Length: 100
Image 1: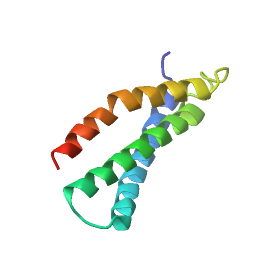
Image 2: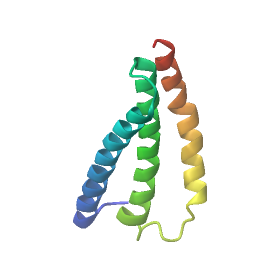
Image 3: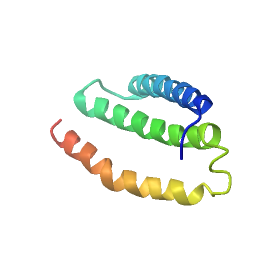
């Protein structure tokens, strides 16, 4: 699949919005946590990162690639994405938190 010039622009706008959302969410989560130490920092970063990935997936699917992916259902790709995230990203986060 090749991207049209409009899709590039939309891709970067959506990506920028998700980046700002992720940073803001991490700050909000850190305010809600009981202490400011490396363990809670890792928790806030992991939660914000996971939420940002899901938001990015959803927005790009609905906005950036809406025309190209019209005929597909969302449940199967999102399910596959969740499985990949569970077995690829979470073990790394768990190892990082062990050293905290």
